[in-house]
Length: 578
Figure (tube, rainbow, N blue to C red):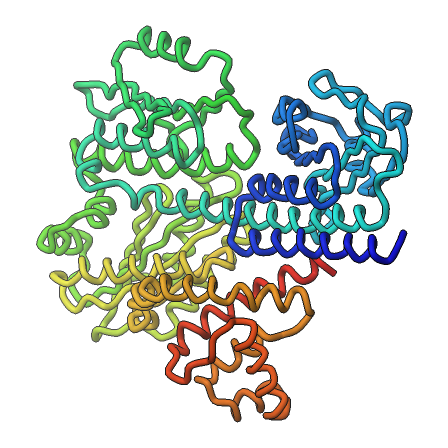
């Protein structure tokens, strides 16, 4: 190949990757990123068609998600290939790139598809899309009407684009999982106060909220009230194409079945019992797509939480348990009366525990948890468990608790977690010197528990003490106030990120260290272990790339946070291009 042509291809390759890296840094969705990759690669390589197949792990199929042009686009989301089926399936199975120089129809791996006329193509290039762990994510395929259309340069583009798409898929999967976990863990917290006062409002809100959390089209809730008079209605929520979901209820089972027949025909169904142990209801969800194993896990976890809440709401009508009343009361006097009923008159320290999951029999695990908490808290303490949450009221003679108590609680619950596969969050509140202060102390325990759920969830069981986190609780507000400025600064640093990716330099990391040092050149040079003249040369290059001088009056806090995020992004993207 002439040097001029090779140089031109190299320039186009760099341009394609540069634009895709920019889109990746902007947080584009994988399919959107793939669609742009198809457009850019088709233009850069002068191909007849570009396909992106993504691997559906649940269906165990390669699904055509993006195609470059009509009529190929008619097969999007319709063409599904098994591993080893067709050229794309062969590439996915072997995770090896392939180039066919002429008449791919004559290749034994070729598989004709009715929705795509491939007879006009005479060359094929297909490359696997795999992440850093070599887990299959899909296949990137190029087609040309010319023979011998593809070579090493086109293959390099396909491979590098595939790596970038794989990184985008991994990131999107991680974000989606975190969003789902966050929504599930905050399910009960999202309930408005008005929806906690009676069964019907609680069922209405739950059905509507579960549509979004579980990503289903229809949600049906059946709950058997403990009340002898008046049965709870069967509650339905239907996804609407116009935004607001439609909620409908009936007491007639025949009407409920007719609604299912009308709206859920041909859909997949998943049903689980509400609560744990003796069930008092059923949660059923319907949607067009199959339910995967992790969908059932989330469904079960949410049904467990909902069963707890519905029982608590229901029991408020016939006499709530002391534990539930103490947790949900908004009245200081009532909270004081409950504590006195439990025989606790002196100073008390409340500890809240929320169980997120348990492997196996919950009834047996809850009894073991109660014993473990009682042993750790001492004989004069009271342990109250109500389904997936619990409260320990620790006797605090003299207005203080042992400094070893948090470690004892954590050690005993972690030991139990290893035995029964439990995950949980624990918050230790302040000491209520009098019973009149118990509700505030419980609120402090709840704040500590929420803190550890947010910032310390790496272990199966995590614990936070209110006294330890009290001073940093406003950090959430501070971070929230800084986010707009940090986001703007990250965008301003995008040219520098692209420069580092293209040149293999460390300018963003240098800027991060400088900002962390408050703009001090001497301290920055010391931390980087480089001469000050070398640092000044880097700073001049940074100013040149950004097109603006580094202002000594800059908000170094914002710049430090933004440059650290940008530097981490560059570090994650760089292996995908190597």
